[in-house]
Every structure is written in C-alpha cells, then in structure tokens.
Amino acid sequence: MFVVNHRIAIPDDELRYTYVRSSGPGGQNVNKVNSKAVLRWSVAANMSVPEDVRARFAAKYGSRLTVDGEIVLSSDRHRDRGRNAEDCLDKLREMLLEVAAPPKKRRPIKPSRAARERRLKAKSEHSAKKQSRGRKSWD
Image (cartoon, rainbow, N blue to C red):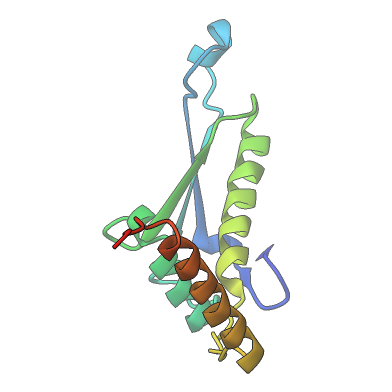
C-alpha cells in the first residue's frame, strides 16, 4: 500500500513498474542493466483516491496524462532500480499532495473608507504636481 497522507492511499496492484535501459554516461554497465524505472498509474480507473482529489489531479496534470488516463513517471537519477522506483513514488506523492487540499475560497473585501480617502488624496496630489509642470502663459 502506497500511503500519501491520512486520506490518500493507493494499493500496490494499481501501480505498474517497468524497467528500461538508462541513458547517459555510465560506461559499459549502462549497456547491460535496466535501471531506469517507469511508473504507470491509471488516474481515470482509480477508485482508492477520493473523487475531488482525482478531479483536481486531472485538471492540473491533464497535459501529462495519456489518452487512457494514465500518468507516466520515470526516473534514472540513481544507478539501481530500487532507488529509481522510490524516486518515481516520491514524484507521484508530491503531485498528489499538491492537489490533496482543496483551494481556499476567495473572499472579496472592500477597501476601508480611510484607504479610499488616502488613494483619492494621493491621486489629487499627483495630478496637482503634473498640472504645475505645464506652460505658463504671460497674458
């Protein structure tokens, strides 16, 4: 069971791992070992995550989802597949924690009377300063 927080837990059978050859430097070992971890998780078919979290996840990361509604995360930062798999889980945990809490409702406020008066006074002072820069007529 992959536990994100007290509300979100994903069963291990919903997470699919594949391992492929890692790119980049590494000498002869990189050509022999499949150490890059690729994690696939179906957001659309998931029932263990609450509906509101799934909706926010799909809204925020919709461009990263496949046509089937899967998120694909990969990691090849480390040289062994276990640490790369943990890195993929950490990435998924961070993504889920970002959308776990609902966004705060915006409460519109009105500026106070004193704030309105300060703003209008500053505007009139600025206007008077600009007016004093004009050409003087000697008529």
